[in-house]
Image (cartoon, rainbow, N blue to C red; front, side, top):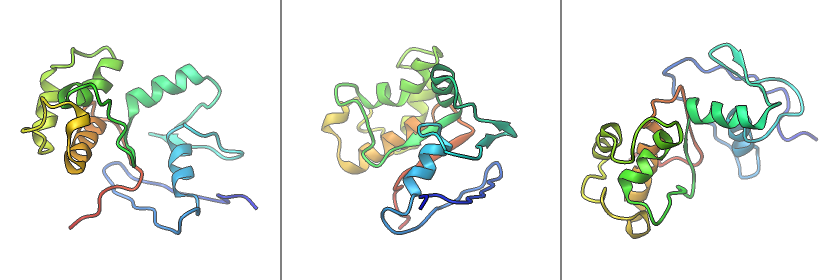
Length: 154
């Protein structure tokens, strides 16, 4: 039996959507397909009415870099980089600016990481790592932000 069968999901620009379900029900798989990390057996994914082309791995990686922000469960911060450098990483991969870019500094402040922004990621608390990961996902103003197991609102 397919893990995801007949999924039809449309999300409007600016809309927030939460996908809930039991462990193993396909939530992360769906996010990975939407992000172009996994390939669907059938169907298509569209962003801004354009179908996602799963054929060219390099083009797909560049598409992700430009259009998708990720907040991973394990944050995936580079422990030897400071918060500003981790937040600026998507910009650096796009060739936009040096790690001290004003946009990265602004995002680090906006996400409550000001005290820790010069600290290396390996020395941060869990909450500080989470804020840095969120800032990194938003720094390049992506059209799509995906959060796998995002923080729960209080």
